[in-house]
Image (cartoon, rainbow over all chains, first blue to last red; front, top):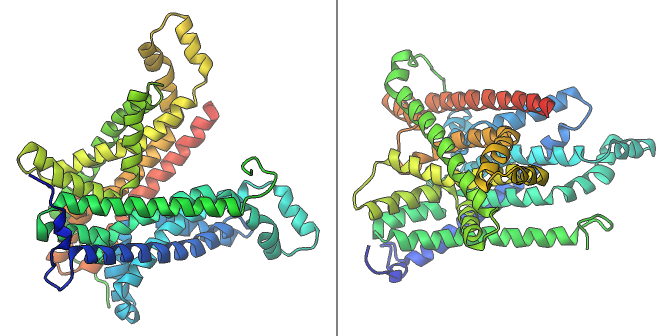
Length: 234
Length: 221
C-alpha cells in the first residue's frame, strides 16, 4: 500500500489528457445519465401512477402491469435487455447510441418506483376532493390537473427526493455496457494506474457531492412550493 | 432476427445456470441473516442514547447508504486483500460485501420496528425486574421482528435483485450463468431474455407472497 500518491490524477492517460480531466468528463456522463433518466422516469412514472388511480379497469391493469414488470427485474438485467436484446429484435434501433438505451433502461426502472409514489400520493387525498372537483363541473382530466395533482406532487416530494438520489447511485450500473461514467472510470483507472484507493476515494467523494447537491436542490423546491396552512409549512 | 430457444435444455441449465442460481441464493440468504443480525446490533447502538455508540452507528448507516452498491463491491474487492495480505475469491468477497452493505439498510428497518413498540412495554419489563438485555430479547425485539417482517422480506427481494451486481467483480452468479451459456451457444439475445424472465418470476412470486403475509399480519394486529 505505502504512501498516498495523489499526483496520479495529473498523470497522462496515454490519450493526451490527465486522469483528472477524464474523471471530470466521467462525472459529466454520470450527471447527464441521471438527469435524463430522471426526466424519463418522472414522465412515465407519473402517467402510470395516475392511470392506477382512475376508475377505468383497463388503465389500472396497464399501470399495475407496468409497475410490476419494471420493478421485478434487476436493473443490470434490464440494461442488458435494452442493450443486447431490444436492438436485435427491433432492427431499426440498431444505431441508437448506448447512452440513450441506458437512459431509457434506468428511466423505466425508476418509473416503476415513482408510479408507486404518485399512486400513494393521490390516494392519500380524501375522496371528497375528487367528488368536489367533479361536482363543480370539471372533467376528470381537469380534476386531476387542477385539484388532485397539485396536492399529490407536493406531498410526495420527500420520497421523490430520495428516488432522485437513488438514480445518481444507480447510474453506476451503466458501467456494464461501457458508458464512460464514474464507476467505469474508477475500474479502468484503477487497473491502469494501480492507485485504486486514491481513485476510488475521489470517485466516492464525487458521488457524495452529487447526491448532496440533489438533496439541497429538492429541499429548496420543497420550500418554494409548500402549501400554506399545512403542518410542514413555516 | 429470429429467436430460437431450441438450444435450451436441461443439460444447459445444469452445466451453466444451476451453479449461478445456487450462488445467488446462497449470497442472498447469508447476506440476509448476517445483515439482519448486524443491522439489529447497529439499530440498538443508534437507539442506545450513548453518543459513543450512536454516532459510529449513524455514520456507518449514512456512509454506506450514500455510496452506489457497485462502488462498495469494488471497494471491498480492493481493500480485503490489502488487509488479509492475500487475494480472496470474488465469491467470498461478495458475501462479505453484501452482509456489511445490507446491514445498513436492515438496521434502518429494525430501528423503525423497535421504535414502533410502545414505551410502556419496556417500562413494564423493568418494573418486573428485567435487565435491559432481557427487555430487548424477550419483549421488544420479537415484536419489532414481527411488525417489520414484510418490510424485511421486501428488502430481501431487493437484495436478491442486487446480487446481480457482483458482475462488476466477475463472480459467478445467476446472471453470469446465463451469460456464459449465451456465449457458448452464441445465443446471447435468447439467454438474456430467459434470464430476465427467471428473475421476474422469482421476484414477482416472492413479492406476491410478501403481500399475502402482510394482509395476514394486518389481521392479527
